[in-house]
Amino acid sequence: MVGMSEVTNYIALPFVMSDDGAAPAETIECFDPNAAVMRAEALSRKPGYVGALAFSRSGTPPPASSATPS
Image (tube, rainbow, N blue to C red; front, side):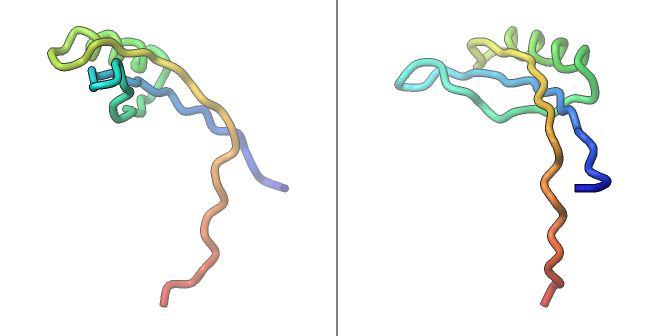
């Protein structure tokens, strides 16, 4: 595939308590790794959350849809 570049996403993932224990909440995409770490740390101290982590994921973005709208 020509022209495909790799993209890195920086994510903060908070956790909430559920009936089955800690469960992931909605992910928050950040601009850079430091922002993800700072956001995760802030979320881990926010009421209602039981923890949080920051991570990155890399890969090629999904191809754009070539279907024409009807």
